[in-house]
Length: 171
Image 1 (tube, helix red, strand yellow):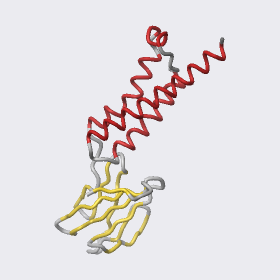
Image 2 (cartoon, rainbow, N blue to C red):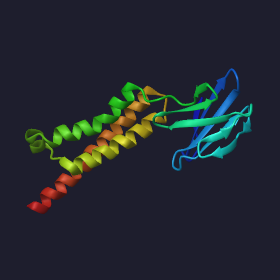
Image 3 (cartoon, helix red, strand yellow):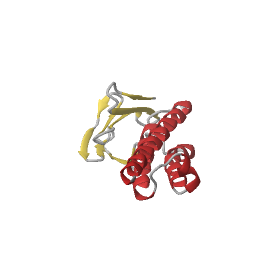
Image 4 (cartoon, one colour):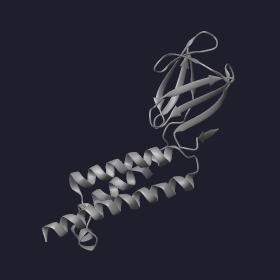
């Protein structure tokens, strides 16, 4: 089960484990602060990513929202959030590929100019990161595609706007 709070700031994931029962994992999207609860009881935090488990062992969190989070307690490793899927990576790379191909094509830029090079790469790289983050927060594949199309359009429009401003200043 996955949900986000009203402000979109906390990602919650609840899983059931044979040994520990219900584990609730919360991660603040903006600050990265993580909390764990087992069977409704919050776990005591021993360090940044260390928690005291109910059986006395120390649980270590590894990963983040993008790469997937695992909890290691003793020899047992529990996956709390899934890692990236191949299609999420492909969808997220589309803005970068579009701007790099379009920005380096004289024929395409004669139709609609877009800024390429370092500026276009920086903008499209930021769009890749934004898209990865947004796509990772939903489980619906259709919504992932719609988010990608929105980020792709925004990236293209920003690169077009900058190219148009540069061409207007040069004229």
